[in-house]
Every structure is written in structure tokens, then in C-alpha cells.
Picture 1 (cartoon, rainbow, N blue to C red):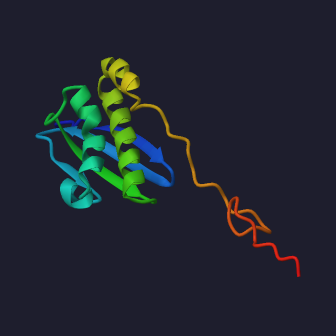
Picture 2 (spheres, rainbow, N blue to C red):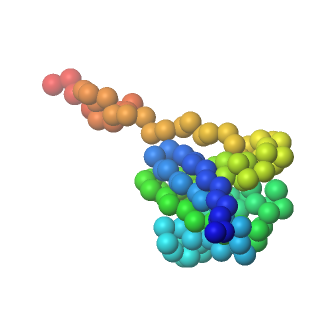
Length: 131
């Protein structure tokens, strides 16, 4: 019986969550069972996502399967990047220094501020009228 090696990593950004699974292969990337370039049409998002692979020189070494939920496209891209970085870290601990220096392992904690009661939004108040 042949055992297939898999490396997993989870990334979060804003309200997006990405579960990344790496398997040794030719470099195909599937996002929610769709083609990578089809799911992320914006070039800047694609460049951002592939940064950890370029830094570690592991392009075309792994097949990547990603499940992404929540948030917008850029938030999902950030979550994907972090999940990919964590999965690469599991596959090879020597990549930690390079990824850490590039900021790929740092969680971006910025979230949308909640709306408060008695106000129109998070900070915006209802318009005041003297009457």
C-alpha cells in the first residue's frame, strides 16, 4: 500500500478562512474545485498568493487544493497565502526563516469593527437635529 503524503495549513484574514492541502505533484492549483486563474482573476491577488512558493523555490513541486470561505476576493487571497505558508512550514521547517522574514506567517488581525447600538454604524452617529 502506497501512502500519500499531505501537508495541511489553515489561514485567516478578515472574515475569510482558507484550508490548504499540499501533495507532491506538478504544481496544479485548485481553489474550491475551480482553476486558480479563474477563481482569482486579479493579477495582484495571484502574485500575493504565490509569494511563499517563490520565496522557498518550491514552485511546481506541490499540487495545491484549497477550500476558501467567507469575505471578499482580497481577504480570501490573504487567507490562502497564510494557509499556504503554514502548509509549506509543515512540509519543511527550514523554510520558517524565509517566510517569517517576508511576513507570510504573521496573522493580519485587522477586522471590521462591529456596529454599536444607538448609532448608525461602528463610529457614525445618527444625525443630530436641535428641533
